[in-house]
Image 1 (tube, rainbow, N blue to C red):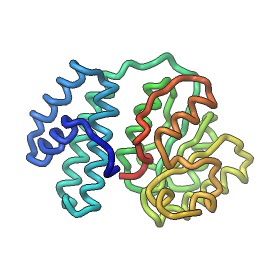
Image 2: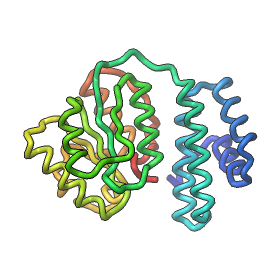
Image 3: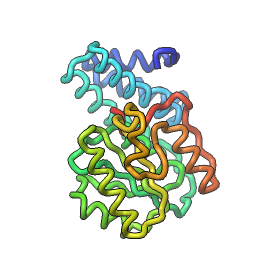
Length: 229
């Protein structure tokens, strides 16, 4: 993302968060909702702020307490934007979206679930995530039209593989997408999990769903994976 040009208001938001100016950050977001659109705020202001926060932490430009503060504040601001998003007519399609048991709750994954809801999906997202056998049963009972799973931690890839195998052994034919940081960075790892599709790229993921289920969506091409931060 080093070659990506971000809107200066995104960088301004990060500065306000770093200075713990919560009221001014909320004022900026509210103003952009009114002047631009809640879709623009969600996709061009808040999601980029999430990814920049993660990259700054990885690069050592942000410590753990600051990253935790930023993510918490961005989640709060996301709620403002989500509440203002115009919801499209329901597609009468369900998607089961879950982390692995014991995994961290990824803000990127929450964000894409919000966007799918905006597109008309009924999103089933268990929280807290139950243990493997119960999660498998919940997925089987959901009658979902698509399944999206996320691994934020490398040690939970084994859990994802067990869950996917259990679903397939039970005769499930619903397409399963798998994303998350370890899936993105380790070559060949996705293929070994047994998932049907990789969810490495948000834009590709939403386009695939839109093509498969015949509706329109719009997600910026620069978006990285859900489950990444």
